[in-house]
Length: 372
Image 1 (cartoon, rainbow, N blue to C red):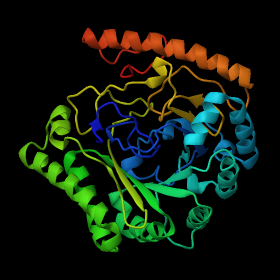
Image 2 (spheres, one colour):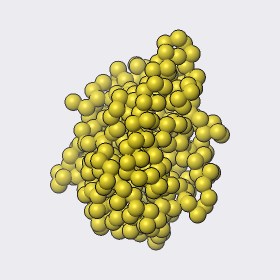
Image 3 (cartoon, rainbow, N blue to C red):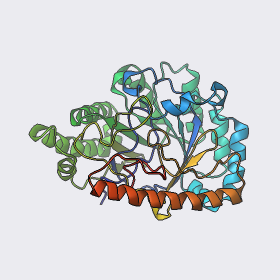
Image 4 (cartoon, one colour):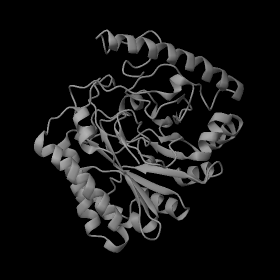
């Protein structure tokens, strides 16, 4: 049985307020390489993205470094093959992200290059695209034709005008979909569930009836919570949602999954709050597997810098695991060990600070104060 867990990690890098959050865990393989192929994003000017977790790192890069190039992708592939932990993660899944991955003019070629490492290469997009004539849309279509999969984050402000028409095309082009719902309140989450329900009600009901059943369960439990206690604490939310699968298989093999992820305020310096927007009274702690010597997600920036986390922006984790474009395989493995020790020491101090009612203090190891 799949459960909502306070400590599940966000498995797909997306824009907006978020860093990481409650993810309704599903039984697909979580281990992956999350690779930034593009630093820029067309949604930085949108209200809901004005504190985007990628914006601050973007401001430190020269515009010429915003796009990953095919040559850099080839070098990364060669290095990954020589570093066993990275090679193992790549076999499970490679997620191409950013920024907005479809803005990289070389994304199709880059996709082909990373496909040499893994048959499971996916791309995440905001799908904020104004026309089927857009180069961005044409790139996404070509990737689906190469058997890549496109996943999205739902943005209500552009749903009707931009996302909905193209999502109707996407579910015909591929045999699966993950939708991320980034919510600022429980009412916001319920609204997004309703948007998805209305969408799939307009599709082939024989094919997508399992999706509608799943969304119906999600809706009913969430509606019950919002009716009784719309500003409940996080533990009451988790209790009310109970055990809940967030993926279904449809006739014909189409796999659908939905992730519900609370958003966080991120200040102009790029530092994330200790509490999420929907649960402002609860310190949101993250259990880091790297602290325990296990790397389940490695994020690789287009610059080659690496961190064992799904977020490289507002978490501000200082221990680095090397640079894939610069360091030798031997140096990378050495830095893996050194950084893991730093993270373990910092996590212990964070636990003590929280136990002593001093949350939010940064320790000298540079571990975010909510990572334990």
